[in-house]
Structures are given as C-alpha cells and as structure tokens.
Length: 128
Image (cartoon, rainbow, N blue to C red; front, side):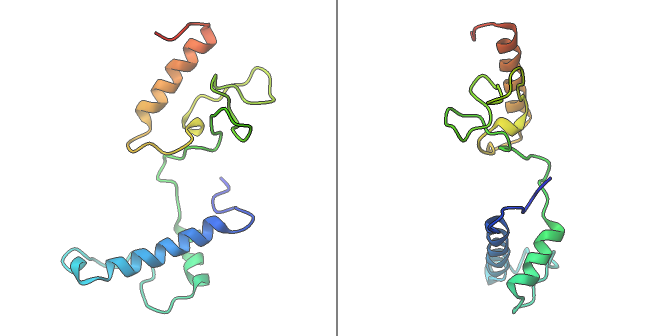
C-alpha cells in the first residue's frame, strides 16, 4: 500500500521522532502506575536506524486510511467536489480516500454521507 514510501523519507523520519517522543513521554514518573511492558524497543541509545526498522516492521493503518484520493478544488486534489477523478472521464471515487483529513471519529458515518451524496450526484439530484 506504499506506506512509508515518501521519496525524501519524511514520513519515516516523522514516525521515528514520534517513537522517540512516545518513549520519552511514557518514561516519566507520572506514567509509572499505568506503564506495562514496552511494545517497542525501549532501551536508551537506540539509533534512528534501529527505530526506523521497528517502524517499517510494525506501522499499520488501523484500518482507517483516508486522503489517498483527496477531494478539493485545487489542482493538487485527485477528485473534484463532484467526486470525479480529474482527467479521467466517467470515473468517481466514493470512499474514505476522498477525505482530505482523518475525521475525529470512526470513518463509517462520513463514508455513508459521501456515498449518499455520490448517489445524488450520479442520479442528477440536487441536495436537500
């Protein structure tokens, strides 16, 4: 699915920094009461390369990926506001991939709303 495939490695570097920050944050005494066994290499002195190996092995989407076919009015958006793929006649995208950002909750309800809107667009109905 091309995770961690940014040609400049930015996505992987961000994840490595997040792993280091998480490790440091959870090592604070305030978390003593709730801390269990580490779920990733917790020893001090791990290199960024070792943490990058861990991230590559363990990173996953948690089954709510969004934004791979981002909708918008700008030229960088894959899908226009009518859910049509730019430059491809007769093709629409109707799923969570059109969401430009991850919603604060589960993606199920927003995807249903997107699908309902797509049905109206395809049938030529006006909203409301």
